[in-house]
Image (cartoon, rainbow, N blue to C red; front, top):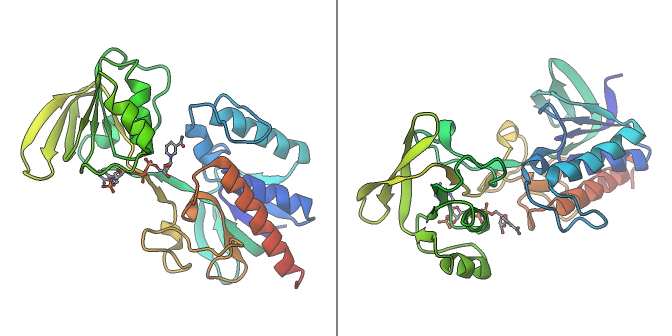
Length: 301
Ligand code: NDP
């Protein structure tokens, strides 16, 4: 009973799509998700999802609900709160909640998480998600950290709600798209503070002050803030694969155009591979490619 054609580790859009493709191709698939519900990063999308063909969900959770309904109709095999404790990739074996499961092939779809600054006060006080209601910091000054699309987009979302928004960036080179940057520069209560790094967040029940350093001179000063959003990119969930699969220099799984990893019979999909485009639709597409690839291998084609 604990032997499958394909075990999929990770229940975001890539993993869910892979499980659907197992069903479509007549393979016995099992999806393992360590969280208490499916969805992965879809659960942290608080804005309308505009690029998923045929659906116009108000946020990622609504899109996730469509996916889950689809899985429920097909009664596919899923385990949630499923902690992968050990892996034997060469033998395609996974130890999950103390039980060894065997497969003929594996799909790794463990996604990515928001990168953290690692400064004092961050764990207690910082937000690592897009701003979303309720916003207890409305009409107060807030900070956003980062210089990419996420940081600038979040600053633009916060500016109409908060008294002042200060975007803190460690250099004066922004990765954010030019039109969002132009919009930020034109927003009266939004300040772009370059060459600036947050060192510590201070407060009682919520953050009240941020200790800042000038990244060129080291000069320090404090800035009042009722909320701090850390939006400095994402990092892949691959620590448990170290030494077992080829990763790139930043920890993403190396895959080829058919989602194959460096180990035979193991594919990887979604944000755990360096994403060319960070989106639900991309991850779902890669899930399809991976299972088609593995199905052909299992059939000896
Ligand atoms: P990015 O990787 O694009 O940018 C990260 C930013 O954070 C960079 O400015 C980087 O600075 C800075 N940074 C990284 N590490 C640190 C650190 N330790 N301390 C301080 N600053 C740091 O990440 P994003 O989350 O902004 O975007 C990720 C991807 O998602 C991008 O491809 C983006 O286009 C996409 N995206 C798309 C959106 C949309 O289309 N609606 C919305 C949001 C994101 P430096 O440049 O110095 O390394």
